Amino acid sequence: MLRLILALGAVLLGMAGAGAQTLPPILNDAMPASLTGAPGDVARGRAIVANRQVGLCLLCHSGPFPEERFQGDLAPDLNGAADRYSQGQLRLRIVDPSRINAQTIMPAYYKTEGLNRVLGPFAGKTILNAEQVEDVVAFLMSLRGEKTP
Amino acid sequence: MMRLRALVMATLAVPALAGEIPLAERRSDTLTMSSELRAMQADDAANPASFSVLDGEALWRVRAGASGKSCADCHGDGAQSMRGVAARYPAFDSASGRVLDLEAKINQCRTERQGSAALPMESRDLLGLATYVGRQSRGLPIVSDDPRLAPAIDRGRALFTARQGQLNLSCAICHDDHWGRKLGAATVPQAHPTAYPLYRLEWQSVGSLQRRLRNCMVGMRAEPYPMGSDEFIAIETYLMSRGRGLAMETPGVRP
Image 1: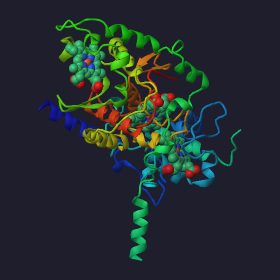
Image 2: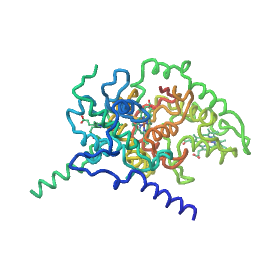
Image 3: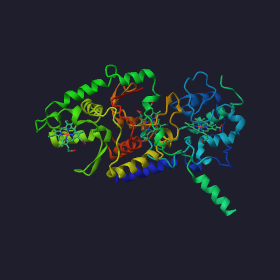
Image 4: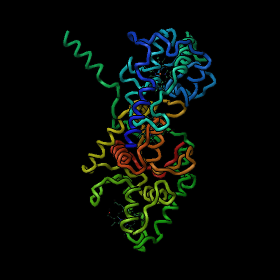
């Protein structure tokens, strides 16, 4: 009985998390509206992207971070992201890149469904919260034609 | 038109995976380490895991349990009797009908033949015995040719290619599709089991292959399988089949 209640609780918690019903609409390959209704913060976004425990981006990507010695090469350089994509396209890419490429290896940063064996402390949680996603999007929108130093 | 659509759909449905590494390209991850670490691994006097081999060698001769026997009393000189054994583990155990890895086999001998208690996973004694037995296969090729291992290999392969954890990655995404690339500071290895148990600088100690697998699962933010579980043994069995022919290097050194 206890197990049933726990299981039910977990289901409800999962629904209260980043369920798709709470997401702004997707138009083609973009999510034009902000998750929070407010614009993000570029400096905070930069810190999230550079942080290997929070954003994890530099495990796979490189970007304009001269102070970060070790950057990944599993994915394209983030330089000039805003030249290649609109804000809405970048937002969808962070929220759920599998909407753009079903086989992508990039994690969905604002999604809890369809995952297996998520480690205890992370279960039912999105990798970033809505504010953090908007901060990252704001930072990516600042990457225009920069060159890696 | 229908055909075109079907073709496009089929192309989209094909996973963007490179698949298993061709046999000819498989090589030990020792080769991607710095020359200092490779020298440390090759030289018994410099290899910190040598202490574990010595622990195991001493324990090999200690009488224990209800039988009052030591490993040596039944197996004689380990350098002779254990030659090549680790290179073909995990192995199918007819008595239990299970696939056992080397640590589980050693514990089976402890409990069923020696009449003593099973040694805890990652304990100094179990790592010592596994490192000592493993050392006797150094330089010998991994053998994986027992058809009774097929179900474990298949299960291990399925676990290796399954997406798991909050990051939704599979082992194969890193180790088959992106080996040699940079994941932050680390070079993604091919993930061969040739050198275990080994000394890892990050651990500051000797650890088993299962401990390494645990680390990778936590990195994927996936709930690791329990130590000693059939799942981990299946992955180990698959890794040995995937690395068949490669030379054993136990005890290895890793960053």
